[in-house]
Amino acid sequence: MTMYGANPEQLAQLGRSLQHQMASIDGVLSTVTSALGGTTWVGPARDQFEHAWNTTFRNALRQLNQAFDAAGRDCVARSADLQRVMGVR
Image 1: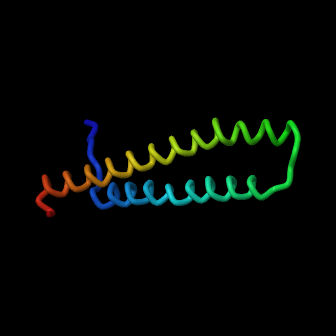
Image 2 (image 1 turned 120 degrees about the vertical axis):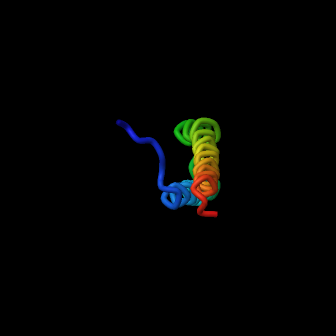
């Protein structure tokens, strides 16, 4: 028989870990945007990269941040629900 469930403490830790990754992604967004803005680089290669950065890459990183936030909050909420059901809280 297959058992389903989760360890509430581990689930909460996973949630916090996922949400913690958001700071790393924010750092990448900030670092690359700043570096690009402060770099003397003119031409079609820069235009192409800057366009890709400002559309595709930044959007993908923002979506990843949203996914980490949603999954992290979900894990923490499920952990709290499990602890209530188990009488831990």
